[in-house]
Length: 484
Figure 1 (tube, rainbow, N blue to C red):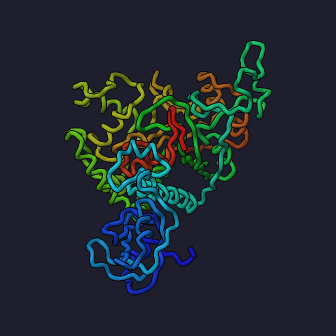
Figure 2 (figure 1 turned 90 degrees about the vertical axis):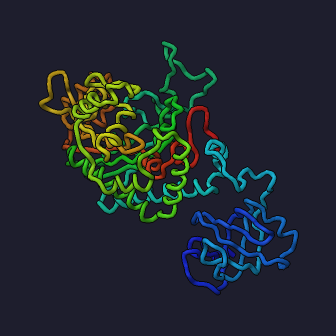
């Protein structure tokens, strides 16, 4: 039954007519007891199925409701209607799955993104989310293709880990111990994790980087692409509790090599989506344009979605140091007129999203790579720069800032010198004995190496123009929400 099905995208792409075809999908609308708009998810475009008046049983026609799943066979004929080259004149229609029109929550009208988040199990059937998740697929495929074609090894790093790569401390505990208070205790009343499943305290990972570095010391070029978790009680449009990260680690790369790889990578995956998902991106660009019209003029984006993507693909990224960026921000009219929520008054402060966006969108008007951040605001594993000004120790870090979203990539050259790494860990109160395996890579054949992390959902958000990160992952996890 199913092997003769033609996907709607394929059928609409062809100029051929006057042949028999079978399509299957879900009814979007049924007009005048005659015209069915059918969609199967292969494209946002529907095929029109003509159910000739008087040809089909009345009881069958009553079951052709929005959301119903059907199989239709008939002749593909040139369409007389606008907006489509062909339509299907049905000779047979079979209901595969009924949909109660009174109860089906997705009616042929506009629904708010907030409402659709509550029915995330059904939102794939809307044009917006169909487009978003096809683009998400294309980006994921392009990521694997980019690294594969460069000879990288794809590494699956642990989801359960005993280390905190970021030193963030906001991690989800993993335990098999009872939660009713009867868990074994130490003498001081703390939980005795030696009695737990793994014999120690474990968490869901925040990053695969440290394990990635281990593999880079054998394969030279590796990348990870997997789920990561943060137990940060944040309800912003930019944060999720569960998200996906891409983290390449490359032996023999320095900071400049790292920047070159990251820039090439971002341009490649965006270009891939633009070439393979043109229809979806045009639809999303139109959606964003309509959304922007509702905003006050001052809050509107200067660039449309497709312009913004071309802007990234076509421009060399501007590269400057954190110190240069601080000077630009401090001297800006925006800072002097106190338009920043967080004013820039001294060297050493962590940049906020508003500062990053100012540099990209107002000052340089192109993507920016910031380098050489103060050591105090960066992780322990970043390579300490030599010949720094007194009191201004910096590290060989780099962040890529993109229009509309701010930081999209964070990375660094890693500290390969054992003495400096140990000293930094001591300063940051990171116990060396817990990371003995990581330190072994500095004992046995250490080499300069670098890597970066890209939050996949941030990338999808950037490419699709969606304003909320919860709308670019199929089933978002955030505080007080783990539905579906």
